[in-house]
Image (cartoon, rainbow, N blue to C red; front, side, top):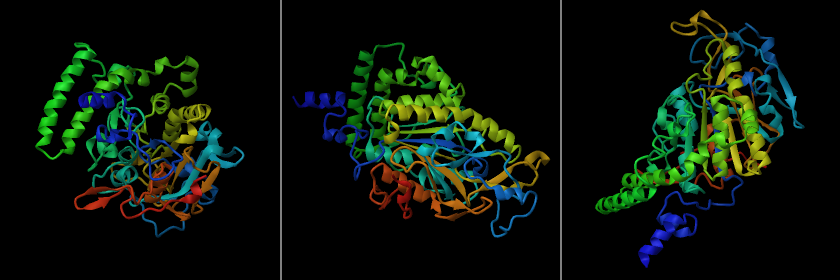
Length: 455
């Protein structure tokens, strides 16, 4: 009788609160009622230029080619005079938020967006800044945001991973450290998907077993699980063994649902046309289908192969890159809104830092002798959020008149993380995990909730 009840729990993953003893990904309640249930991070890899996209700086026109009065700020590489944006900014929505023509389709949702123009990070290097944005720690490998969220909330669909990282064409800088579970149990690590592939069989390796039936696979897994359990009993419930067991089980269950979730060919042609044909558009459409199926966290990497890191030819590079994602982002927000999912889905769009308002000067091995790009800038940049309880139609904080550094209502990455966790129902100081003799958290010993961003 007891074995039968245990088996029943495995096929009824949300039937009982006691499931957390069986599945570490079982859906759980947060500290307090949450405004958001899902998290989607559109990651503009490489450092999108805020002064060309969401932070207009008309003063740069007066300082074109002239040294800006910001001598105290040291750039990573030599830069020269001011470099005005070549892109036109317009006001959108009832809120009148100014957004560049690069994102004119996304700008239709200005009244759902909260644009934070006073972000800042720690250093102007990709590697530590990527880690900081994704894990809250710039030097050591720590659990990623998605891992912390799935550790706290579990997921609503036991047949799909709780945390998925879509990155076309291979890994970005810092590779899987961007979606690692760190010292959290391995079951909370992000599942990597190479979305350059379009066929589901290639998109998700070994999603089907063409040699034996599901019933025979189940018998094999039952035997394997029994052997692993015996092995685990002598090793004090080793987390790595538990993660391996859970991975086998999830892989089996994914055969039933993943094929449908990732196959955008099942969408009407009119929907696919609205999103566009780029890889990023396809990722965004898959993300909507995953949100509908209860996946908790999704990260959509854009620019992993050809990043927003435009040290030269910035106007051409940013126009190309924005063209690959603007239409898809707008369609994604349209769909979430129409389906009643935007209210419960927190959407974040940003990279690891911004870019300088000054032109980058040629250096050995860089820029090919050109002076039409921007260097890295961690002193000030922009992130925008939508849905999930944020205050839409809002601009929060500002950089100086040139866009060099955050000066008003400054928001550090730790503050952003604290606010995101608050929207998901967590006190960021209480969502902790015991490791190496102390309690760790996503925000380390920093971070404050920016309540002005919350509706």
